Image 1 (spheres, rainbow, N blue to C red):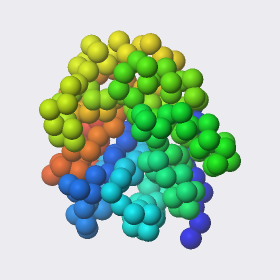
Image 2: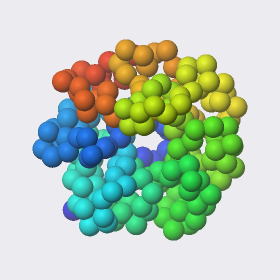
Image 3: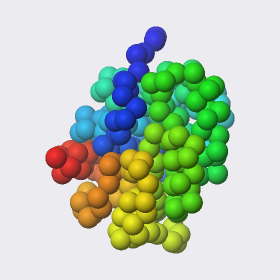
Image 4: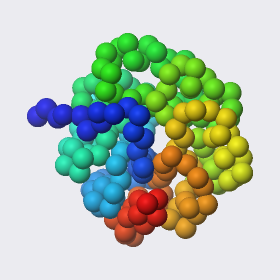
Length: 213
């Protein structure tokens, strides 16, 4: 089954991105939570599954593609542009170590309506992402996070200072919750635990999306 991509304006940044983490959230409960979060207003799914082989990632991403399409959300694939192309994803996301590959990824995709975004953690990476032509960036971690326990975090002031140094849209990532997201001025938010670990993913997503209005 073919899918038209949801994203047609690369200047538009997702308000609320849900990042996958099958090491903690998997199986049917995971897909149920994803659907509830999409129903609540999540407008982008970022498939970040570094331990999956290509075959599993393709099957996993294809199932999420159908959900994303149903709720008019974007599907973004971490790193693997070939999988992104195979499932008709709306974009590719790269880690901070691969920012310099953004031009090559764009050439390989050959589609102007697909975004390429990047993970950043400091000013140097933000400037690289801007220089190499990223559409937007994720800046993290804002707060302490279960994904990287014990890792240093930027804090609210540190995040705002860094985000103000580049012209790129900046999405806040790392420890973002329904309780603290309003403390951080950002172009969008990205979460894992706040939705996948919630007893009410739909309500939690609604709280963040409506809180931005």
